[in-house]
Length: 337
Ligand SMILES: NC(=O)c1ccc[n+]([C@@H]2O[C@H](COP(=O)([O-])OP(=O)(O)OC[C@H]3O[C@@H](n4cnc5c(N)ncnc54)[C@H](O)[C@@H]3O)[C@@H](O)[C@H]2O)c1
Image 1: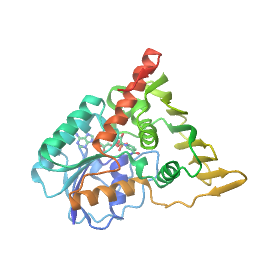
Image 2: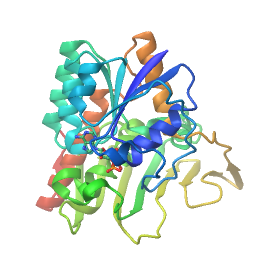
Image 3: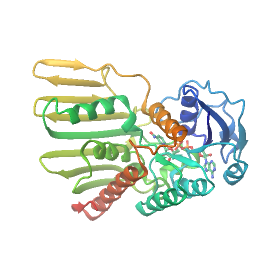
């Protein structure tokens, strides 16, 4: 049995908690939230994706409102961090140093240097560290990766990614709306597409970005052109949409011999067009949150390093986001280091 301590029971913590109920061989033994009401699971959290039914067995759970006390009490194998992003670095480092493996929600941190520190401590302690870059496990994005790698439709000519969300007014004490605490849409939301762009095509040579500031600071909208040899890759991330606008994820990929249209606002969210043929893909209904947690539980159980999302790949994606912000700020193309 792999024992989990889940920390931060807002939107994402409740999402993870509901998912653990569907994973065999896992036991939640500790829950921690700084707010008593976060520990009250009879109430729903916020968020822009529906949280599944809460069937998770909590009979062995100890509840904590203080993170350090939870680490000292122990009784778990890894810590699942669903706390606000400005706590990711410190909470990860504390858990690793206390001898625990860590699953940390995305974005890994608020700066590349913080992400590097997390990696350094994971290396020093020999503990496992991964980050919730869930798109690499999301069935429709995984299918697209298979089609790109197989070259079934030839080479990619162009790829356009976008992610639109209502303004995230659900977060505790509005931490997400404060640019210095969340990085705004450019870091928080857009890192998903940047990570999937890295997963499909590797690191871009340079980025040219343009941004629109959010009311609480940081870029609430960012558009970017990524430099890759032989193809055009672009993306948009925006969380300035109306409250009743649904979260939409899109990717439109044009190949030499076909087109992939991924669009979660459509009845058929993944369709391939090839000549006169239109193929709708049947997708596993379980989402990337499920598969990423299943994968990390297996890593912890077998003491094997994560391979699909590593701390290093998450840091690289964060670094590209930071380069985009620099580019938007300077109004010119910037090389990705
Ligand atoms: N993978 C995804 O698709 C996805 C989606 C949404 C959010 N996230 C990420 O998940 C993380 C949490 O976001 P959220 O939307 O759940 O936020 P949220 O505000 O809904 O929840 C955060 C929770 O952490 C708790 N918390 C704050 N300080 C704490 C502390 N010191 N000790 C213990 N608990 C503390 C809060 O009380 C709250 O319950 C963020 O990093 C966010 O970017 C990821």
